[in-house]
Length: 361
Image (cartoon, rainbow, N blue to C red; front, side, top):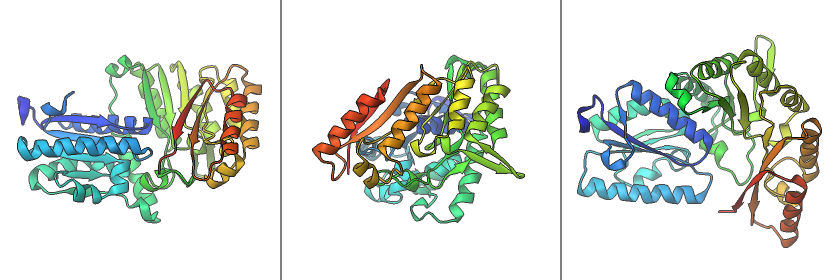
């Protein structure tokens, strides 16, 4: 091992969404607690981990290219290098990654990231492929309980220190997975069914981050506003959770959340946003298309009219709210007329920003 460190040097590269950024942060915390040291260059690492994304094709191309370069290094110069593929692409491709890239040592899906330290140890000792996948592609009923266990194990391992405050901003996961099954999206299959965290754990995590100097917390979820928690006959909705964090963590200057799903965003949540001065007046709420025909093909579960009604209700309560959206161009079957309707929705929505993607098979 280089640098005489107790466990070795790790390089971790993250692709994709904010959820992946948080996952990488939690994996890093686990490994640092065990004595691993993180470095900025793969050339200086004993272990190279790629935390991957499967939502966009370009992200996967980048990973395959990186794995190709690492394979050459292992074959020619560094046979002891440990290479791991984590995250959504790992869950989607599974053993196919090892079959295509023989020099990959670890394949670990996003629901099993708490096992990364063990997988690294096993790869170092056994020098054989280590796979840890949740099997969400079959959506087995038992995966839900497994996801709940792994979710808490990973999130509760988070370390807190005054150094966190140097970053000023932090992510906190409130829900993982998705039950929506939009026809263009792989997330329900890579991150599994919806699993929600207890409000007590969430509030405690936000408190500890604020106490360490964090100025802004962003609550994360694939469909963040779908959050709910039932315990002892009491239900906590997304609106309830927002208000509770705002009231119980007054030392936190700013609270925000992403990403919201249009169909399930309640007026209760809008009311909390309007009433709570420290909740940012910002809503990232993807439309994906301005055509009802396309929305039906996408299995989005709402109409353009319902979507625009939500934006109107938000602006009525918060005239200064800033809105952001997502749009897909070139979805299968999209006509010029459908495309024109999407442009019209952009005009009506008046987004602060909009992420526009070319459809990828």
